[in-house]
Image 1 (cartoon, protein in one colour):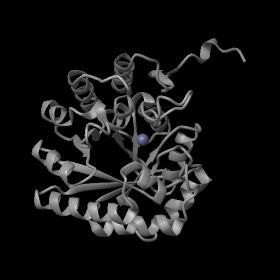
Image 2 (cartoon, rainbow, N blue to C red):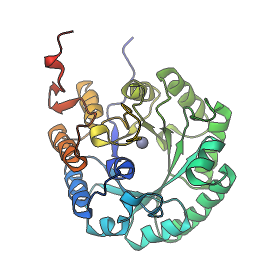
Image 3 (cartoon, helix red, strand yellow):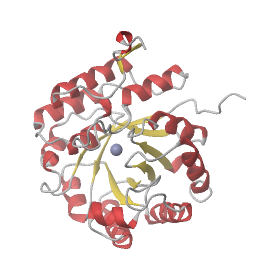
Length: 309
Ligand code: ZN
């Protein structure tokens, strides 16, 4: 039987936040703005621009307010920012933010490690953030559930726990919940099972996925999610993200590889692949190294022609 796949997939580009946050060398505000403006011309419907976390925690995004005020906003593109708490949400609103994303971990130890809060405390913080942004007229409030498909400290997370957290986030006001594979531990079978379980309590159109390519299973996991009815997928141009100190570790799935695969499968993304690849090249120039995306020109893959084995 042929695969059951959606006709259209919405792409969320996260490189300016997820990719740049891990970079050691500071990327200038002008360069960040140049990339975001270029991404706005590719046809992606949503870009995660930056994060209003404390500059001590993420020095590379210390210019969040400046970036938000300098980008050219294109009609039809949504510009999302990450906020860790109420202070971040207020700073984001002051810069004319239209939508926010809040991050919570499905694993207690990862949440403590990542945001220095228990899950209960994070849910309380999310409630405060939602109240604040709703008062300011923001309607798109996203929540990412990191380590959904596994935690480096706790291993697999019980599906019941994931479902109850996703339901809680939806009840608190999240308009979209992103099931995130923070450390690249997901596999296609787990992805299908978790989504099947979650969608019994939360409508599928409220869910999105975010995969890392650490074990090279990123695009396979996307395919599995699409078969379950997911139509929103996050990715980072050039695959930027992840830990730059882990040798050989790759970050997010590369947006250009994702768009190439979907378009080859006759799934509409609305994204111009050539423009997206130009953005990937721009990111490589910004970070000064070759990245992990495999598609380097429409129809051509990286370096394989030299390999005879
Ligand atoms: Zn990521």
